Image 1 (cartoon, rainbow, N blue to C red):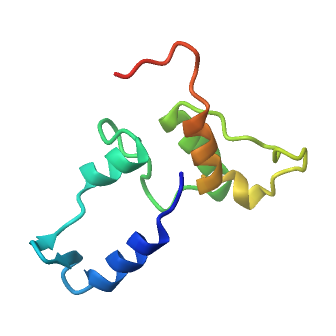
Image 2: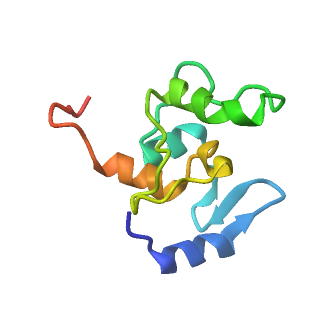
Image 3: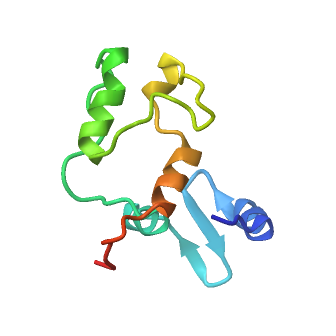
Length: 109
């Protein structure tokens, strides 16, 4: 995904943290969960991915894998072992790679 730094800078300048909205010439604009879902192409229906923060550290990777229906890699692309801490996280570069690698039978639906 290519980032438009000029647009990002302009939006940051118009963000109001007190109201969690952008103040634009046309009026206020609030980002909704649906907006985020459309931008990231992640589904927002079904069970929540994150439950209690009291879940044991070593169970997060498996928990997220089951909810998203994916396998979180235990090795980095270069063949290096992924540290245990990173096995419990979804790193943005990995998510971007996953979004680009669609199966051959993928549909627009």
